[in-house]
Length: 221
Image (cartoon, rainbow, N blue to C red; front, side):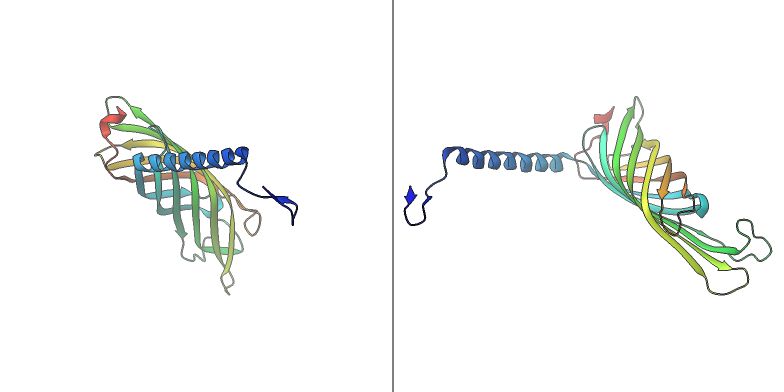
């Protein structure tokens, strides 16, 4: 059809345009179907753990955290992990080991990471070797009090953080799996803590809780 007043062709879409619209609808429908299928068959899990964290200049810290994830395949998971740890020391006016000018009071370290986890079954046992590689951001706070007295001074920085872990998980039941992981983490700061080294070992001991009925222990061995 042709509109004489505007000089523009009007009317229903041409055949190529119709085919493109149909193709987009098919691809969109396929994508939604795949996502729904993955979510329906995935095993969602939640971790809770205590941690011993070597934070370099921020000392060894004690803390804990959790994780939320789901299975991508039989051997791979995707997960988010968050944790918080703390070092606290009372003032010691007779022993300054780390800095001749300040006494440290409170150091803390926080990480928020996402990444992939590989799960390898160990034959004849309800064990899985688990290894994860993650990246995200961290925030470290270091509080100091001058030796001569005065106001507490605080240094705080936020930056990129990377970490990796490896460990063992015991599948006690369909839904409960204790684990222990040993890893290393490193933070990269560009501001107030750029002269500090926030890197060290990271030990986690905890329990993974699987949600739903899609997981069977004997499927892994």
